[in-house]
Length: 299
Image (cartoon, rainbow, N blue to C red):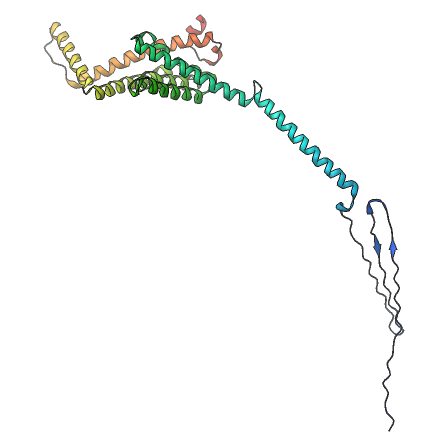
């Protein structure tokens, strides 16, 4: 029996590697590539694979330099823009300068109004200067807006609260502060004189009644009752002197009291509108006012 010998068939395998190197500036082409070829005696086949590495920006020295320079240039431009914005803010037409000027004017108006009101109360000459206590609030509202008028009102009230106490501060707020603020809002919005005088008269009347009530609470005396009693006595005397034997009722007394307060406030507000219009026209703000024709012709 003949023993069997295993026979191994070895195929000839040839591998050819052809490296190609191509150096160009900035590595614009693939640095190298491989071509593989396998040869067999029975089954011939070819396998070709080409490997290429993509180019990237960080391998290019020239582009890196350009990016660094551009970043430094952008930083310098940002710094110059910041400096230019700061200079623009500090210019007379800049927002920072305008806000600072507004704040300074409001504080100066508040200080002047508080000082004049304090001295007029101390010297008992409040009735002679009462028509000017609302003027700074109106000027601030016309020049800088309603917010500036509110700032002037609050600053003046706080200053009087510190200098003269809460009573004088509330008196100024009810009789002059709210009236000036209402007038400034109406004039700033371009309201007519009829509407402005009507609304300011109501505000002034409510402030006067509020002042009477606060004074009654502070002195522990009903001043409103005393006013109605005096009006009732005066009406009874006039009716008796004219030959009418009738006694007015309390409702009639209260109605007459309200009418008198409204007439007083209306006359006062008409004079204030006339005086403030002349002041603002002399200050160069005539174009912002909505004046009646007869007053505009005379101004």
